[in-house]
Length: 122
Image 1 (cartoon, rainbow, N blue to C red):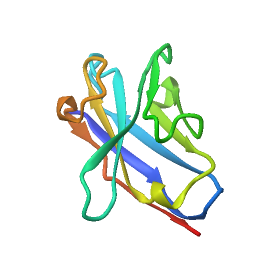
Image 2: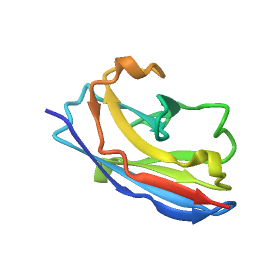
Image 3: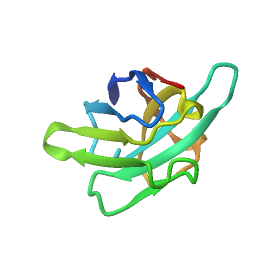
């Protein structure tokens, strides 16, 4: 089965930057779509962005567009989420997830990472 292991996260000041990594192990060739979601305490999980391993297609939620950037390193089976100009409202646990086709719908994703915490202070 597919496993996703995340690293990164931590405390950063508003306006600062932070990067998260998602390493995908035992990945069947069909699981080529990686989505990102976040969840604040007491809130539901919301969409952040999506990328394919080919890199030919990406998508971002309006709330992070122009500030967050997705990239991938196929040789390392790793997807990166670069977060710039962070705001206090970005504070949340961030999850990567895998699926077999392009989607931005949370209920479609099959495998999930651990969700490290990102905290943005004022």
